[in-house]
Amino acid sequence: MLDYFVIGKIVNTQGIKGEVRVLPTTDDINRFKKLKEVYISRRNDIKLYEIENVRFHKQFVLLKFKGIDTMNDAELLKNTEIKIPKDLAIPCEEDEYYISDLYGMTVITDEDENIGTIEDIIFTGANDVYVVKKEDNQILIPAIKQCILNVNVLEKTMKVHLLEGLR
Image 1 (tube, rainbow, N blue to C red):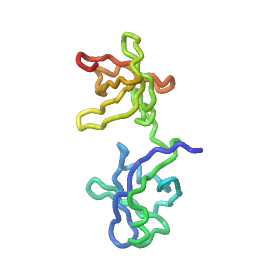
Image 2 (cartoon, rainbow, N blue to C red):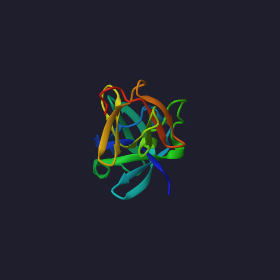
Image 3 (cartoon, rainbow, N blue to C red):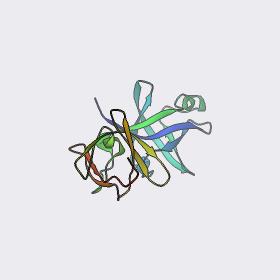
Image 4 (cartoon, one colour):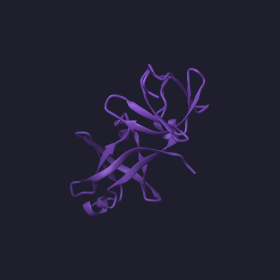
């Protein structure tokens, strides 16, 4: 089974010729121009679609898929996720990692205390916040340089410094 990355969500139709309006969830929206095909996930079903055209309008990506030629066809794709196989993802730079790699990661303090695993990530305007849980305890750790000391994706561990008041 393939691993996929979600790169956008189809939020609406665009016009009457089968285009869809996509809210991108990727840092680089120009990546849509480089793609020839994407997978669309609806409930438990995933299907490959060939991209005919890509345009940009405000914060949206407008996509036209081969075989989707009317507004009614496009309407069926509303509220679905656009995915690509993980091997097509843009490679990370040094000290970068994919959000999906963080879930389930073991979090250890700079004093070698295991404080739990990352169960959720809260996306705020300023910085992300990692929700770390262990049994009945929950700690919210801001994703800032003062707190996040090291992330080892291969070992699935994160070393953190807990600022005063985080416990």
